[in-house]
Length: 133
Image (cartoon, rainbow, N blue to C red; front, side):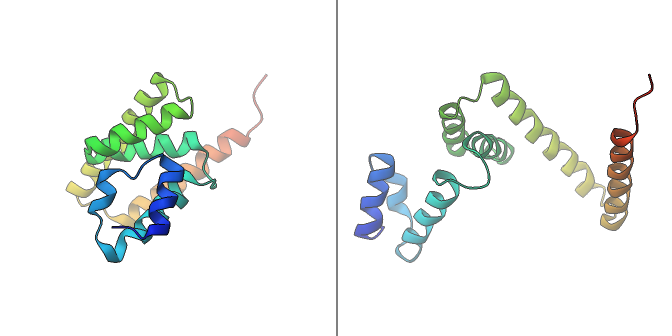
């Protein structure tokens, strides 16, 4: 259970202390709340929209119905459209799909990095090239 101070802070932010937060072991409860508060609820480098979409993509990829529901609600609070939610899930699925291929085939990491760097350089050159009239 979180300390009295953390308990009050959670209620201020969320209107209640969710029951699942009560299951976090004593040594980690205040720290866990701090991580959640500072990364999910606080102003950070990522916008609320971006955090919601990243969270939803990860939640969908790991198959967590709790996190999927939470991050979908989080994204909708940030005015993310249904089409954007669907695309975020599809991007996550695409990443997981290709990760399975790369890991399952034991692709050499150094070769993968070198090829990716070459591809990025090529794309940057294409974008910087003047358009033919």
